[in-house]
Length: 81
Image (cartoon, rainbow, N blue to C red; front, side, top):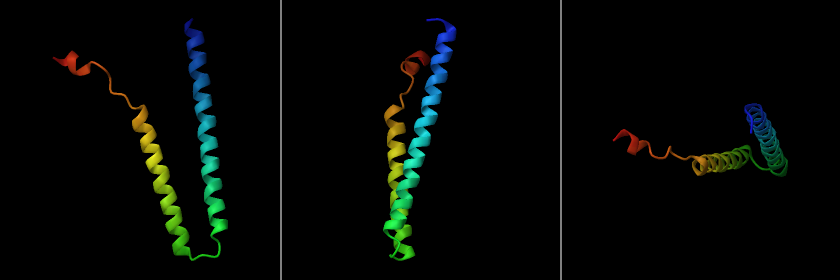
């Protein structure tokens, strides 16, 4: 595999990440709007509580995803010794 092919592959992966991020953001916005319209007759305090719960759930999901893919560099502690 040449260097140009590797660079092209990396660029394609970055484009795919951008598209997936945009889709996730769109779905997240749609869920918030749908929840607002579903709860339009409830009090503002309840709507804010539902929104806060949703945001906490999304934050937990993002942190869990980051921790799942985080890998410490292998062998660094052995290299220091």
